[in-house]
Length: 245
Image (cartoon, rainbow, N blue to C red; front, top):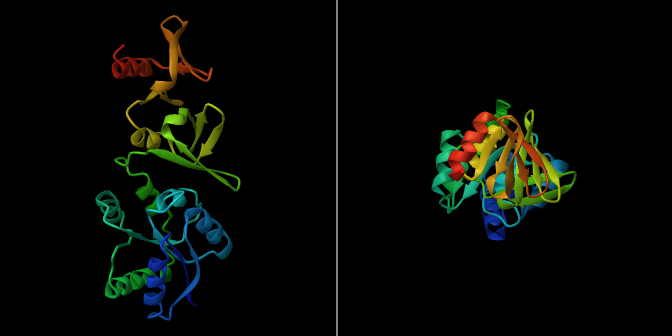
């Protein structure tokens, strides 16, 4: 049985190079090519590849952002130009990558690793989750999937986040979106002006209109969108310390 392979890269020449290299190994069959993350997600759902060769820097959404939206990812081999953070993260999580430009010899060694993972029916979901949730990775935006629609939310548009088990509700001025990610992971990756004011809330302090006394020594944060959020004692102290109140 051949290993079904999907190539994801916005550069046609890069995909052609992989197509050429992969012909040297009869155990692999290229079943499709995608030039952006949106197209790739649709093809992964329809074709169910065993392995994807995934470029990180692509238009619309990055390769890493695309992976966040896939529930059961196949084996992934990342390809990237020099990126010190990404490479360190890949090596830490034992995930294979190809550093552009790569040689045919390096590529064939990667195919051997893929075959070993495929043979042992290795589940890469946990490895990929660890990669995506590196605590030193600072988010600039959040990508969410609502049905078949994918939305990119810049962090400055986020009013606050609300925990819901292993999910988080992301509240913006106009809507709210559900993301499968823990509050702790968001707390580690969002900029410093996102402050945990309560076990249930992580707020963008720039979106706080004012603090209101709720009852004796208890406060709520009045957000610019009209929401009122409970502030815990520890959250109140963190707010004061962070904002210099």
